[in-house]
Image 1 (spheres, one colour):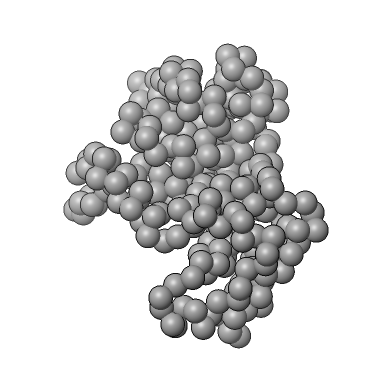
Image 2 (cartoon, rainbow, N blue to C red):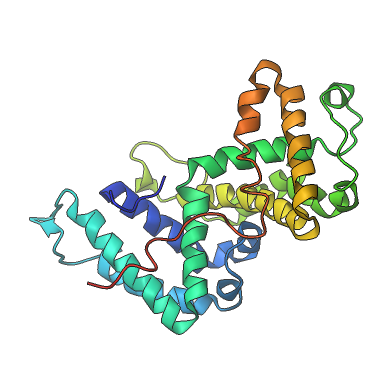
Amino acid sequence: MEFDSEWNDMAGTEWLQALSLPTLDWAKPFLPFTLLPEFLLEHPEVWRSIYTSIDTRIIHPRSADYVRDGQLIDGEYGNCVRQTIVEAFHSLASLADQRVSIDLEKWVRFHFFCQESTLAMKRWRSALNRAFPSESSERNLCQVHPPLVLVPFLPEIQNLVEFGAVLQIRQTMKDAAPPPPCEQIPYERLDKCLEATLLSQAIWKGMTLRALQVIAERLNVAERLEVLKWAEAQLQMIYGRHGAAFAKQLCGDKYLQNKIPCSSYLVNKPLN
């Protein structure tokens, strides 16, 4: 989902929540797993200073154009957030580099606004997870042996795609996250804060994409096609009559690349 032409209030809120993650101290050890742009990992204070300005203007405003009699004006909040985020991306481009700003926008879109990438990462993870030998006979029955071009890189990607490794990282992250405020959902207390939920999603998607990047960086086009054909066959073996449909959700080799394959729109928007 690309909120570009139709930027509503909910989209604005979700963008603000996603963009807050690189500013959270407790989240810092886990951000590398999400493939956050390297500059922001090394210089978190740059984005933190920009986001503080967003927080002042949008998240906790005393008065604003989108507030009337203490209530949000429908649609105006989303438009205001959109313009403020465009300005924030321009600020990041001037303080760092436009490439960093573009990569941050792509990072948000990939992790939180693209249903296609969510399904693709699930399917690639299912296929890659079964590239490794297992003591489970049931799992081995679903295994199509990986192509020879993939075998040398399996040790490098194992901790990126095996479910146990991912679950351990996500559990450590949940333990580090603060509890949610009581008022986050009235009459119900969550076991983790909303930011932890978002970060958990970004972790497993980022680790899966990183595994695909490792493969893409080491193989030529023909070899990547061989890996794709294997993954499609693996899914058809695993899921039976649903396998063909799930294999299509891999999206060919679109995500078997060394960059996040999402578009950038906001960074290149002119300031009004």
